[in-house]
Image (tube, rainbow, N blue to C red; front, side):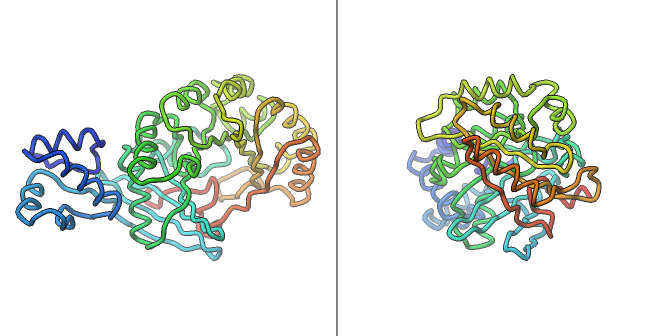
Amino acid sequence: MQKINLKALSKDELKEFIKTQGLPDYRAKQILHWIYGKKAESVEDITELSKALREKLSDAAYIGNLKLLSRQTSSDGAEKFLSGLEDGEAIESVLIPDENRRTLCLSSQAGCVMGCGFCLTGRIGFKRNLKAHEIVDQIISVSRITGKQITNIVFMGMGEPLLNFDEVVEAIKRITDLLGFSKRRITLSTCGIAPKIIELYKKAPHVNLAISLNATDNKTRDIIMPINKKYPIEVLLSACKKIPLSLQDKITFEYVIIDGLNDSPDDAKRLVRLLKGIPSKVNLIPFNPFAESKFKRPSDYNVLAFQDILKKGGIIAFIRKSKGQDILAACGQLKAAAYK
């Protein structure tokens, strides 16, 4: 008989499994606490259960864990974790320290199909979607390895979260319900799968949304992001306007600035016009170079000038300093070593 991975079960599925073992309902609550609260690595670790009960459960189930393949630390303190999955695929997660915050960047897919020109992950192609427990296990694993409390979660690692919609929604529910994260400390970044943006707000806790925009006209965005040919800028922004935001919420628009392509004053002025009527803020991200890319990093002067135009246009705009560049852990640089 094939053993059941307890982490793979939802809360309701675990309750049903416990019933099949002839155990009372409260045992499911105990097991959930040990998996998500105490980060137990095996059934044997659940010492709240008797030895006989642990042996009984071990015959039918186990607690799966990501396998740490490598851990790299950047000169700026960012850490990159390469993790092996049970089927031999591999993913990367990045822990980013910033004063009192420790943000974990999660992967939602092994590889990526989007092919964005500024992103290294797309060069390895798409391998498969991650299961909800594999997404959540990145948090458990990094917390256990580092011994540090993670304060914020961002879905900005390998893959496009909204192309793995059901598993990502389930992962968000587990992160808020079972790991106890506030939805306000979770951000999901998407390339712009317009129909799924609306659906996300119907089916998942209302986490922060970040849209990878990166251009102000369709011709340029087609070059940078192939998804634009399916969901062009006007379709994407129309979807954004339909999101039921609360009064204090804003959509973050991420804008990777590329030298000579999307960094002109005219681009900045168009961006101001495009975002009119959308509660928003803009993260400006100077392109992070990698060997195979045809793009170049913009000058600091152009980045600052771009930001200044946005601010004068009434747009809240930040220049995001990407951490972990020396270990290929910065925005757009993730490419699991197993695929190199």
